[in-house]
Structure formats: structure tokens, C-alpha cells
Length: 569
Image (cartoon, rainbow, N blue to C red; front, top):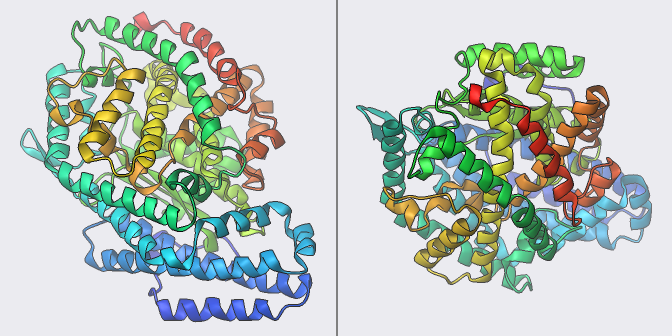
């Protein structure tokens, strides 16, 4: 496989033919059944892997182009077809996996490919079965419908119409009335669409609970963990980890929130007031999208030869779509185009510091994908999601020395805000996770009961959040904004785990930048050759699940915060 040598816009999507896909996959299964040795089986596995790369690349292209424009009917039809075919593909993957797991030559294959590959296959067999195909198809359709609703949002604000991402700039305005008006407008949109979004989630929860029970699980929680490849930690360990955040971070976060509001001089703060970091206004990028990308090129050129080469590759091949526009799904992500050894970065620039965050966070994901793309065993190229977030969040900190390029005189303003937000994010992250555990423990709860529970959890971990003028948020509807809850259940605690690990890179880089950077590049090249806890151990990183390690990562940050003269901001 050679790396992409054309523009992203020139890549062609292949028709999604269930008949042809099934025929091809069945031929590999038939061939594998006839294998009598590890040598012949390995040859089939390599052909299977190559076809898998082709299939996943085509599916990625469809998904990317749909998220770029949900109003394109042709792409929407392809997305729908993909939603229907994907579970069928999984069923054939299941058959292939079962043959390998039961093969008499399995030990010989484990010597060649490593035992972790077979752990992943065993895990996959536990999470899928032919009897849940129809439910899986319906699950895909429901998550796509949520994306469509969010992507089609049109919010009238002061004579113009904006999508959800574009409203972000107004909710951070230094003018309190603008912040309020914009936040109320977004809340109203969610209130108007609450029934539709709530119904989608109710259907998703019941479907997932049904599938879990059909596979022999008590509820969806264990199945959800296994789907995410969590083979070396469980819900009990996550609960204990959340306790560490509650004890070590929530008090610090509350202190930082109080300090923020005091500096703003606001007596009765509302949630939107916390969107403003400083009385003089938030640090804003000193240029448009083109300017920021040019500055990012300078940063990556200086950071290391490999990052400069990589970012040039991304630009030259149109592998970033950063502009917010009508019909585009909100948020940001990094996707993989395996057959072309290329990542793709999706974002919605809105003129805030979040634009710079994208050029560090999502590019961190992309760099890892770029550096791991030549790993021969495709299953080892990308780690589990919480490990992936280490690459992105750590890159944010390695970019700190270059913030003058983006913010000029406000560079320190950004650094302080970035670190403070990274710390204060942790209580929110554990709130989303605790909420999801409650939801799947109580799958028959009503939408109103879910909202009430979320508000209860929110008040425990984020007591500063008041929504007096926003009825949807006030009764606990904030969670409907969090797309991960719909499309990737339990994928949110990952950000907090990765953030705690990324703090280690920040602290190490302040002691020895070159040594920390080499360690980071090694981690990126390591790919997904081990599950999360083992991956941390192999790369000499502290495990957040161990009691006391959250404190070790977070306590030194208070000293860094004190280095900034916030009175000058």
C-alpha cells in the first residue's frame, strides 16, 4: 500500500453492493476453512486484511462526505445503505474470527501475529452474533438520524441564520447580553427538538439493552465496554477512578470557577458566563482559517521534521475540512483512510480558540494514524479510544511554545485558559460517564427521568451551573448536546483518562522537552499493539486507575497556574 498521491476530492466512492461484499467475504471464509497450517492461513489472513482496508476506506469516505453535507441526498442514501450493510459485514467477520480461534494451528499464528490479536478476536465474538443483525442495522440508522438533526440545525440570531457550531462564537462573547441571547437561542432549539432527540435515545437504549441480553449479558454496560475493546479494565475500576476525580479535582475545579467569576465581577452567574474567561474577552485567534493553517505549518515545521512533512502532506492532499457551514455535522473528528495510509481531519471553525485546539488535538490523532499506518497487522494500527485521546491531548501541550503564532500578545492568556479548561473539564467528563452507566442500568427510564438524573449528577460535580433562562438545560437536557452519548456509548470517560495521562507529558516536557517528545513519538508509533493499561505500562506512563495517580498528575498543575499573572489578562 502506498500513501495517498491524489487530492481527497478526487477519491471515488465505490457503490455499496451487499451481494458483492458477501460474495468476497464468503470466498475468504471458504478458503480459510481449507487451510491446514499457519502458513496457508496467514496468506488468507493477509488477503482478508487487505480487503478489509479497502472496505473500511470506502465506508470512511461515505461517512466523511455525509458529515460534510447531510443535505446531499445521494450521499445520504449511501450512508443509509452502509448502515444496513455494516452489521452484515460484522457477521462475516464473526465467522472468519471463529475459524481462527478454533484452528489447530492457532498457537503458531499467535507467534506470528501476537496473542493480543486473538484476544481482540475473542472479544469481538462476545459482542456480535447473527441474531442481532437487524437490531444493529436499526442502531446505525438511529445514530445517523441524530447526526442529521444536529447537522441540519438552523438558529436565527440577530437577523442571520447559524448552525450549532457557528453559534459558539456568540456564546463566548465578552458582551453578557450577547452570551445570554445566543445561549437562550441554542437552548430553545434543543427544547423545540427535545422530543425527537429524546425519542431517538430511548429507542437506542432499548435496542442496546435488547442486544446485550440476547448475547447473554445482564445489561448493555459490559457489552458496551467490550465493544470499545476494554479488556484490561471494567466498570468497577472506572467507578473508583471517578471517585479519584471527585476527591482530587472537583474541589480544585470549583475553586477555579469561583476565581473566574470573581475576576469577571458577576454577582449572579449563569452557565453562559463561564464561557467568558476574562473581563477583557477570551483569547481569540489573530486571523482567519487560512492564517491559522499557515501558522500551524510553521509550528509543525519547527516542532520536528516528521511533523512538518506530515502537516504538509495533509494540506497538499486536502485532508482537512475545517469550515463550518450549513448542512455540516457539528463537532470535530479524525478519520482513517487505511488503503491510502492517510488520516482525514474534520472540524467546524467558528473564530474562537477552539479553532486552534482543532489544529493541535485532531492533528495529534492524525499524526498517530500517519505514523502507525505501515503497521502490517491492521488491527494493531489504532489503539483503543482512550489511548487515542492521549495522542491528541498531549499534542495540545507540545504546541504551547508556539501559541504566539496564533494569539500573539494573548498567548499566555490562551495557555492559562487551556490548562484551566483541561482541569475543569474532568468533572464534566465523569458526569457524562456516570449518567450513561445509570441509563443502561435503568433502560426503561423515561426521558424526563433521564433528564432529572443528569441534572442531579451535574449539580453534584458541577454545582456552579445555573440555567435560569434556559428551560431545556434547566430540567437536565444538556446531555442531548453530547453526540458521544448517542453514537459511541461509554466513549467519554476516555477523554478524562487521556487528559490525566497528557498532564504527564506536559510536566515531563517542562523538565526535558526533547526526551518527552521522543517518548510521545514512540507512543504514536506503538499504535494499538496492546490494550489501554498494558499500553501505558509499555510506554512508561502512569495508570490513572491506580489510587493516588490522579493526584500525582493534577497537583503539580496548580503551581503552573500560579505562574500566570491573570490580573494582566
